Length: 145
Image 1 (cartoon, rainbow, N blue to C red):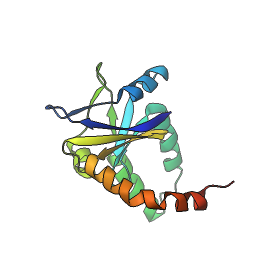
Image 2 (spheres, rainbow, N blue to C red):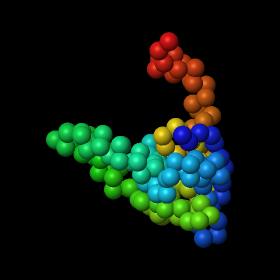
Image 3 (spheres, rainbow, N blue to C red):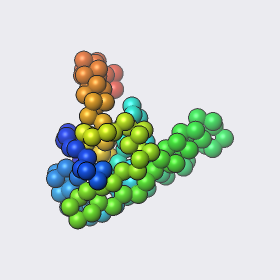
Image 4 (cartoon, helix red, strand yellow):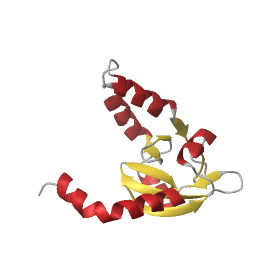
């Protein structure tokens, strides 16, 4: 559903505008609300409400008697914020999420099928440059022919 890579800048009020392509996808799929939370590799995960509920069900099914499940769920859900873009497609991220992702001015929106990732621009390019060399190696390990 969400694909591509888009560089954007926080406006003077600290808002981000969703990429036009993501706004089109949201409109076509009747998505008017998102959930944003702490992601992995220091990015933010952004899900449609429908996808968020699916993820929530999977994570709620983890045994709360397992310490790693408790820790993950606490950090993941405590960071969650409901986000409704305004009419121009602008969103305002809470300070604690911007601090987590080290977002200062420029961000990269990355479409990852069922979610959007929001990265500080420098963190995205660091991740990309460190990971692209092993892309083929990873594909051989995780893909079945």
